[in-house]
Length: 27
Image (cartoon, rainbow, N blue to C red; front, top):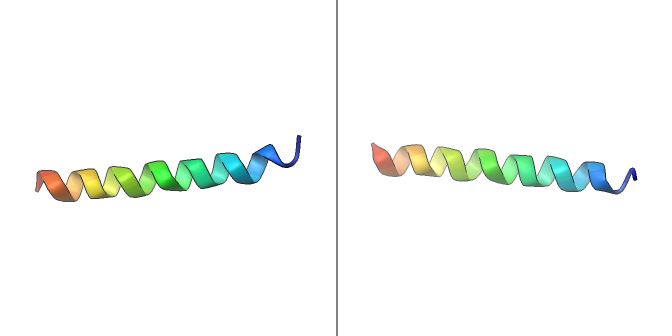
């Protein structure tokens, strides 16, 4: 179960990065 935690954190970071790129593309 502990192995899932890093995966969730990495996916969350990827979502944040893609979100920032999306905002930059809009501007």
